[in-house]
Amino acid sequence: MCSRTGALLAFVPAAQFKLLQGEDAQSVYKFNKHVIDHLFCKTCGLRPYAKGIGPGGAEMRAINLRCLENFDLDKVELKKVDGKSL
Image (tube, rainbow, N blue to C red; front, side, top):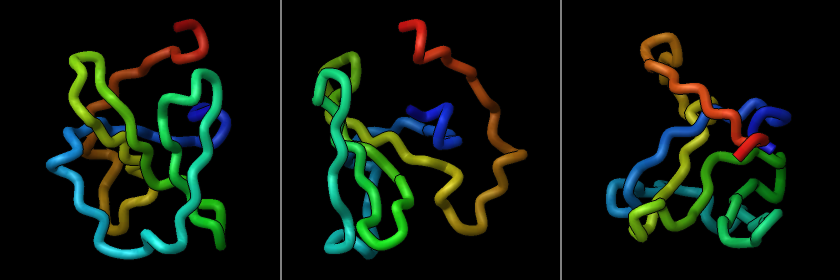
């Protein structure tokens, strides 16, 4: 899913994530095992983040860095993951 939509994800603990606005405009999409809440804007379809549980059991957020304003993607060290093969 991420490769087709162009998502570039960064994972953070839920306690370090704060949504500033737009919660009322969101809807949830679940696929595959239905364990991750992929949130998207009901108006424009943008997919800014997802909610789920990390490998260690902690609640996590997966932030689509391409949705952040004034964020320089060239300064991010990327770790490619082939999610299709997992």
